Image (cartoon, rainbow, N blue to C red; front, side):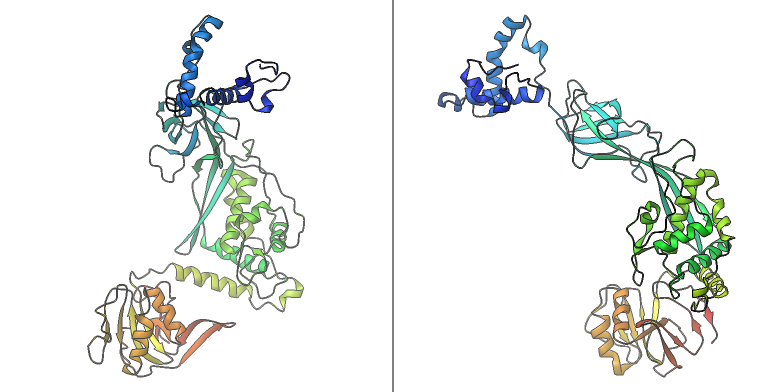
Length: 503
């Protein structure tokens, strides 16, 4: 406690005004600040500057002069009461599991060594790490301490949220759910003053649950219902579910957004239930919808595509019914028939039977084995011009057997050309200007050519049949010829003899 009437002018000069109130009390940080200011003032004279050039040297000199006075005043040495090796409050740089984990998250049970990197760790007294919400939590003493690194055993954590992921493979959707938590990591050298990193250091916990694969028939029925829900008030929309139609889906399918995460009983991370109030636009409080909604081309505002719709359903079912019963509710909602409203039934161009047939066809296509190397024929209308292959090689004319360009080879693709009339335009301006196979395909389409799955029996420039361009609005999405061949998208190709049509 320092009073304004103190007679030492250096002491008064060294202290800021807020320290010199009628009855000021100096806490630890202000006391150390005051000592630093006093040391700088006492030894700021010319005779001390050369001998004590740094602030640390001046503080050390002042403490050496204080030691005998301290011992006479308190009857014990300064060294017995003060630890001048204390490094203050640690500064954290990162925290991660010591052993390599996949993913880089620790289980809910904890018991995993965590390495914390930073500065100012106190090696003499030890360091304590605190795990929990910022400012409170479980205190654990670090088992290994050095100047810039400590190792501590992570404590267990309670689930706070869930993570939902969905994988589509070979025509089936597989949903994986994990319980998750994040704890703030703080460190202290004295269990009183803790690090205050901004942003805070977070430690991620994850407990994966057994995945669930949705049956093909159930997926087809849910997709049919999804398309009908999307078309409500938007007759030609079958792909994106708006917020208004999501609330309609909750009412028609009896979807409940539960309050709890974890076991569905008392193990709650604090998520609150959401009412079923009809809202318009995107200014709403529907957390489950917002977690998976995105902006899509052709959709008005935030909306759910089919994959995001399944993710949202999984989150709703898990939070409402727990980890044991949530899987059964996909089958439940697949049995509920949802029809078009009277105002939309006549305008809708997608019938339930057509949706069911399309879903079955899509599942069959996705189950087809893929080629490892793509190879596409290049057409100009009905004329076969050449073939481009996703493999390092040269650009060769089939008519002459010679390279078309002076380039020795292309790093990512091979091109064989059958049409000498357009070789320069295709080879030089399109193919060689592309950095990779996908870029070459895009440039060919922009130049007015069409692409088809390679047919090894067709190697002539002669027109092989009529050709039609397929468009969706103003966007060109495909091409079709009136002779037998393989159905194929551009991003992948079916294996040989798959998806081959005679006509």
